[in-house]
Length: 458
Length: 144
Image (cartoon, rainbow over all chains, first blue to last red; front, side, top):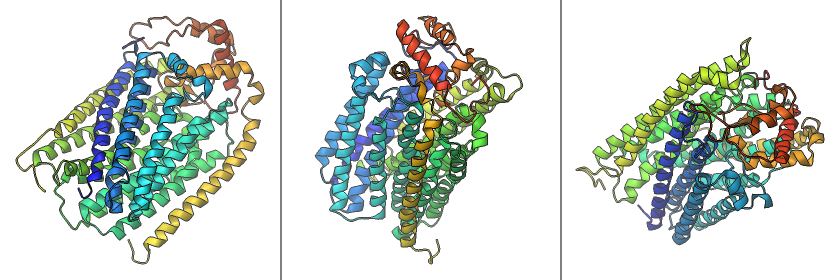
């Protein structure tokens, strides 16, 4: 580690992994509720457990992004972090606020939480993924501003690299588009339209800049390929992300009361959204093939390559599967969407955070790479989690195709609940794959506590 | 990549392309805001409906249901539930009111929210309003 202040990332990464475990446990709960409907009812109803599952995902990825920024920005800027103390303070504020919010979800009915946090003053709650009490949302903005100030000052006073710049643009975009979560018009069409300015422009917009910057950084460090080459790739990948992804927002505007021309704009541009993800795969493999050094951290290279492949499959291929308006007419709001969501989030965002954690954690713990034994465990966890997410996606896709057919295409359409009974077998198989995912995650966590003979490859 | 294609060209494509398509997106958004009032059923956005939307959000209904296809996929689509229930707000109210407090053994069940009669009317009116939005013919049938 070149700069002492990079070590603040350790807090963020540790919290990220802890919350990741929580996310998966709640995923298993809701997966089971799909087939054993009264499981934990009425104590933890499905909507509460799902909210915990999705909110923990968002929060742990944000911890991961912030940790990645705190780790790589000082090194890229060639100076210490502007204020390590502020980074630690915002860490605790964010963690406590996040924990209180999750406890609020679990301990009191959601409507009580809305009353307790005075939602009626500025109603922002009760919309998918943006369920946090308004006060938590304000807290997120404050933390984000302190964070952006801290890394912004570091970049401003240090060397400005393309990676730093792209990461900074992505993170500023993240903060700016989050502000739309405070806008909740009474008109349902308007509400839905602007809701996507946070949700879509995050995950299919500015987050891709963050993803690209982190991946580029890990590739520079592990392959030793010339910065000029990597930066050129980074620019062209993120250019394609935004060129396709911004108008690609239109694929959410087909059936929510917005004008029908969005069916054209959305279909054409989102059909091109796989391009940057495909380039990312080619990028990762080309850089590793052209490597000028053999980095001892094989696990980090595996995560980086995995990010390219799985982001392309999950975000690219599974997104394309149902993005064209004539297809989406039948698949909108079915398990197909759930299938895509699982592989895209894991492949693009979870994996890139795990890649930077894999690369940087050993260094922050005083070694270039973990022992061979620990790396083998980490690579086992890579394959267990990755293969199970592939199966979760395949089972949900099968469920979604059947659901679409039975409920929407067949001559004698079934009701929603009758259809759900017909596809229960796939939900059981998804749950089994989820258990394997949990095993993979437990092995992943265990790898941090595994020593070995060659522990200090410095 | 080719030597002919320089980093500064890649950078210009990024800044230029992103800016251009963001401006195009803003223009389309501006146009959309002009068209939405002809499709969004706002003439039926009464104070009761607005209160119903608040109630919908306050109880996190989207955590199980979809509304116009967006939300969770655990429980039925509700954008067209008014139509599916035979254009009857009474049927919607009756369903919500009759949910068993402790659920149904082995099955998914909607929680009992203990809504007052006024709240039941609000939520039912909100769902009736939602069914009046012009959704370009979605969903394919009344099953949602």
